[in-house]
Length: 372
Image (cartoon, rainbow, N blue to C red):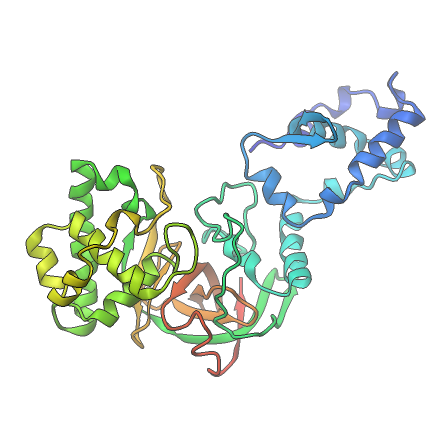
């Protein structure tokens, strides 16, 4: 998303008249602008994402509406002359580096909401890795996009213990680890879309991908068919514990739909090899087309299925590699995948891990993770 203030104001600053030298410069005009730009809406933490991550942005104020680009342009123009703008109550925080605004939004979110949910918006690339790039669309990375409350409390009823070193741009979080990634495979949320399931080419891709994933599960337990408890762990992880209505769901419901889904996408030989006959029979009337929904016919970012050295099964919104650490920060809704870099870590993204989401391991030894 282009920055109109930077493009139009900074580049053309030598050629533009100062705001107080324009014909429209009246006390009434400035009082109206002060009222508008002082609206509580602009103090909300999430306004950064709402503005930066959407392509079409329209501001509604009372019965009036205006394109965000014009709001952005006027703000930049007002702040062009600091002495004048400050005399009318405006500040030059708009001129702060975008990086500082993004970083401060993380600080404000953790402090105000007393949880680490803001970190579920990180993209898993770049440094500092813990600062979301709010100017990037995050529809597929945001687990709260439907506005539903989620019951997950992997750290039980705790609040964050944290610190931000603004000099080094390091976020320190207290939490616990349940070990590192041992086995993994990539997948896409698009695997559950109707476009993939109903097309010949999609079926070909799905057969290859699920054969690979099921072989990874087989390696972790050295047996086929896969036992029911392992399939339940995989089902809840791939669905992030949610049903087709994005409501938290019973794992028995999810695993039956998962088996029905695999029945649709796999050939009979592969299905029979990995799925126990009794579970197949129990899933006969389940809805395979409902599993993994909602899923749209978009290009999703690459995700990962993984199994830790301790046998925990999970899925994450980013790619992983062997040795990545599963971390549960105090005050978190989701665990995170951290990548060791010396004595510090990069955050890769949030994850759903079966057997952690209700605080089953919250008494584990605590440690401080320094995230760069």
